[in-house]
Image (cartoon, rainbow, N blue to C red):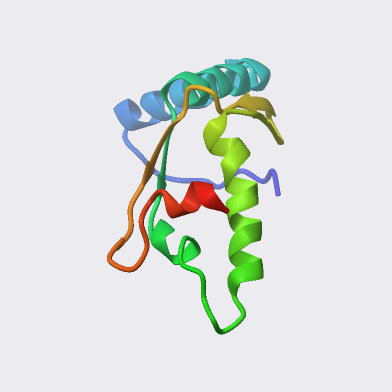
Length: 113
């Protein structure tokens, strides 16, 4: 899998490619992950679409599933630490934007369950 593929390119293109490859080799992946986690914690935005679908109580028996989704979302939105493959991520300062068609349910219905 580490076989190099030969390509013909101009000297200027080859130089740019070599510089790019060398820069990638010099990156410390742990530092990249650490900066990414910090950036996500301080500047992260999560967009939750169709949140109204879990706010409505349904007579067809889907309310148990909705309550589970609401129960799982609540600590994330209120602020908690989530375990990721790159390390723990605090959601305290992440902006959560929710949207939905609240013509049947009201946003306050989400906190009542």
